[in-house]
Image: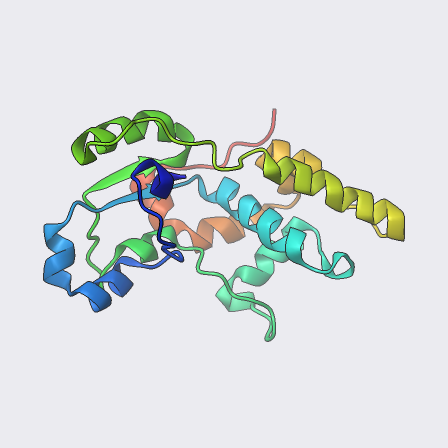
Length: 194
């Protein structure tokens, strides 16, 4: 979404600032205007689950609470993918220094992007980027459960409200451990569904 808004067509592949420093040199990166988007860690974890879980074999899809606990490096099972959950790790150079000039929050991205767009001289309108596709993918996956008579995981509900995925305190705590840096820096907290 942001790449399209700033007129870039390359795929960043979720590179870290350390990756860019290695490719371009750190002095070059320091001279550029560098911005990043952070997201509520609990919502981000559910988004990753929906993205990776919906690509998985339906017979291997596990409830979110089990899935997120397996992402914790301390509880990681060999053979399971280990995703980089710590958003702040993407923002640090090899010495651990944060090299981001401006942070935007995903939850207020349209408003937070306006000053960035002004600085870059681009339109402040962010394209949709397929936000509704996640809901449709969840519906299609649930139809597969019915077809193959698999135990159902309510993907549509968690796509609508990420908090409903957190059925155990352990799953809430796992994200808090994995994302402590962004939680501390930006004051995110977990608020249960009302």
